[in-house]
Image (cartoon, one colour):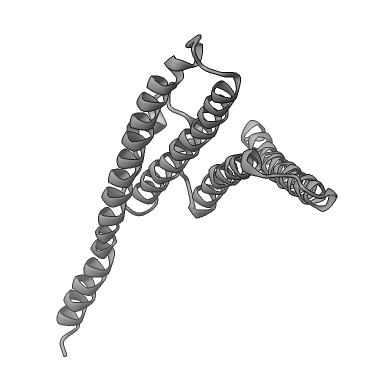
Length: 199
C-alpha cells in the first residue's frame, strides 16, 4: 500500500477518533436540562412553601397546629436546599464535561464575575468540585433525617452524635485537602517565577 494512502487512512482514522468526543455533547445538554428541571421543581416548591408559611401568623391556629406547620416548613426548606444543591451538581457536571472534552468557555475564564467553581482545568478539578457539592447534599440530607428522628433510647442519641462527628471529619479532611493542594501549587509556582526573574 502506498505511503500516501496509509497517511490518508491514518489521518482519517485519527480525525474520526478526535471528533468522536462530540458525543459528550449529549451528556452536556442532558445534564443541563436535568439541572434546569430540578431548579424549576425546587422553585415551585418554594412558591407553595411560601403559600403555606403565610398561615403561620393566623391567630386561629392552635399551638399544636402552629408547631406542626413550623416543623413541616423547616423540613420543606431543607428539601428545597437539597434540590438546589442537586441542580448545582448537574450544572457543574455539564459545564465541566464541556470544558474537558469540547472547548474552554471563554466567558467563564475571562469574566471577573465568574465563579472559580465553574472553571474546570482537568478531571481532578471536576471531581473535586462535584465531591464538595455532593458532600453538602449529604449534610443537608442528614439534617433532614435528623429533624424527623425520634430519640427514644440513649443509643439513638449516640448514633446521631456519631453521624455529626463523621460529617465534621469529612468537612475537616475536605478543607485540609483543598489547602494542601493550594499550598503545593503555590510552592510549585514560586520556583518558576524565580527562574523567570533570573532570566
